Image (cartoon, helix red, strand yellow):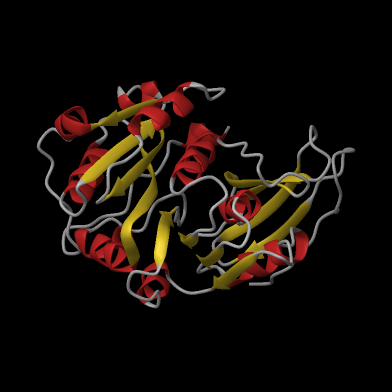
Length: 290
């Protein structure tokens, strides 16, 4: 399969952007008509990332804003973080960390080497950012992180719009815990729709490995009314629930935070997921991106 096939390059003035074959499908970088140097990355038509090269603190997608809240509260404001990002996309969150917390050291694990090449070429990283990118499987890359190195581990991995099964298990979370420093924070992008069986199982799985949990999502998603994203936050240290709740509620599309007994009750008795029983997250409905 040929790679690097380019369409017209450009910004907002009616130019179609950049198209390339990558390992995960057909990638398109589409210019944002409202922001001069901003782009949306789509893979096979599904939006993956949005990046504003002039303002990396701008987070367009709802779930990325919720990740941003987690980053903002993971340590005192401005304090550098050691972060691991499983799933790279266009490196939106890594750029956000670098901009809001200068001198942070970050590792991005993105299996799709052709996508990494495309993003590096078309949406170059700030040369001052301490961001290392590994083009390997997420669990393989996580296994190379030294014990206790990371203050933050973020999982945002999708293949064909589904989270791979091997990134949904207690064994996977065991390695996340190994890589986290004491009091470190794990955050994961989970996608599900009615009847929310995958989401309930992922909460039960995290509860089997972490003492503290919170879930940030659109209320309609939590009620099983539509397919969407939820951000799971986990740690062995107390989480800043009140501030997470305030920030989520003030988003352009207000989110809800569930935690404590309410969140455990939400699982409905779901069992933790092991490697032997793990399956990929459900595929989104075809209508979601149209």
